[in-house]
Image 1 (cartoon, rainbow, N blue to C red):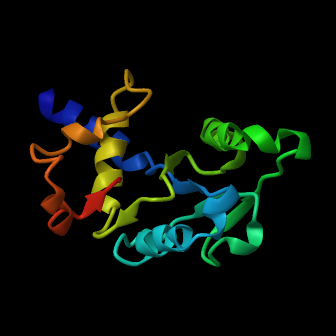
Image 2: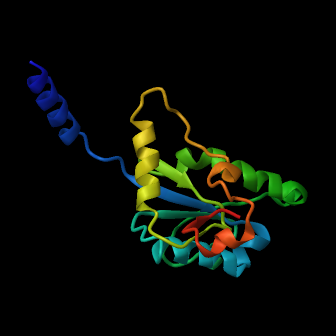
Length: 160
């Protein structure tokens, strides 16, 4: 009986397609025109080996790297004074603009130095538990030597 249950569970798992995953980067204001925006996307495509859709939410679409799907953002002239807060709130609206099942928000100053597939797979595995609704981590807790500046020379992922 145990073998049959395992076979049924295995067949159900095999029939469940993997969720589609996209990356979203918000680059507005001065950040949209900085080289950091392009470096972030190039690192996700290059060393990060991410082949899925990368959404670029930006108020300067001409500055978005060619390998992104641009989501134009418009800030009313009367709101320019507090625009940085509006930009930060965009990540709360990501699910309104993506078609994929999962969207991975990446800060524009993140540079991938190794394939991100294992990181994405670990996050997806965490979400297979029905009780999980949000996966987050404290960057300072990622490694025991998180505050050691030489770690940047040996870590494949770094968030700032």
